[in-house]
Length: 165
Image (cartoon, rainbow, N blue to C red; front, side, top):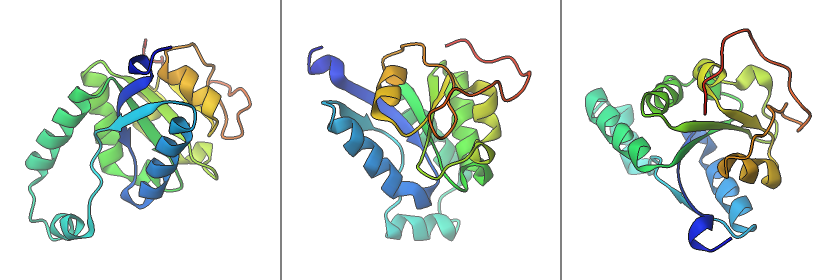
């Protein structure tokens, strides 16, 4: 595999408190020779303050996120403790689906099935444990069975038809 083919343009959807998880994910994949180009928003403290004060309109945020998702080849959703409670994460997943992106859920260490966002349950192509081989196989489009947070095979979470990826 050439270095160019190991470069992946992704959008990593995550709860902003899980920024460290984004760093760990890119480091994990870098350790296996991957060059991860992440287009997700990582709010610096000064920018987060503007967001918290409502100084940036929701429409502006949506437009920016749509552009960043459009640039990415695939969308990775970091599944952490509070991911399922984050309305922006669900919105990003729904936008990724509208744009025809493959959506890969990756459990952070300590993540549980209860942490899976509703939109990921509905539209996710793959859901894998925090394991480099599983994540790489999902990025490469290899058919990876849905996994539990510990990496064991998962049973279907519901009877909702899965998206075709």
